[in-house]
Image (cartoon, rainbow, N blue to C red; front, side, top):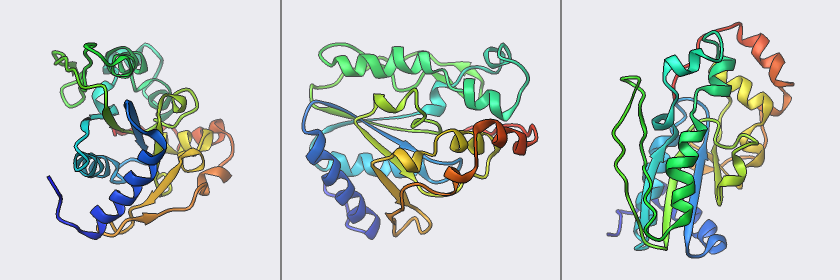
Length: 222
């Protein structure tokens, strides 16, 4: 179904055209990183709708649905922004139930949600399959960290300086704007535009300095 053309939709069509020209067919994973409450989830939803205009099978997932429980996080020490940055996301769960089986294609099933953050509990998995040509649009904090960034075929970052303590630590370690193939400025969500690569996070110094600046404040969810 063709979407109503708005400045936001027109911009996202251009973004989609750009990366689809590089990725071609097959299974494609698009990752969208950005600071807390920067609009990345709504951006991912809208991008998925734009991709569906092309008659591609498109699946959506958010990293916040692959958290570790509070009990599991507690095994890694006190509740601090640094702990959340390092261990808040259950990357093993994300890999085992979504990324790896999605890549395998065929009849291999995957899940797009494994954890209920609000209830702090696991959810019963709903296994899904898809055609050989399918796109997964995944949003969430820390997706472009060094140990994950090679998992994605397309890496997007929402522009904006981090304000949350855990985000400041993450950006000091590796600013997603500096490694993303496309940076998107959502200062005016109805009229998104290209953002500049790099940013203030590059000047924050090493991650341990950012942690010291955070003063031990609690971490927020995505």
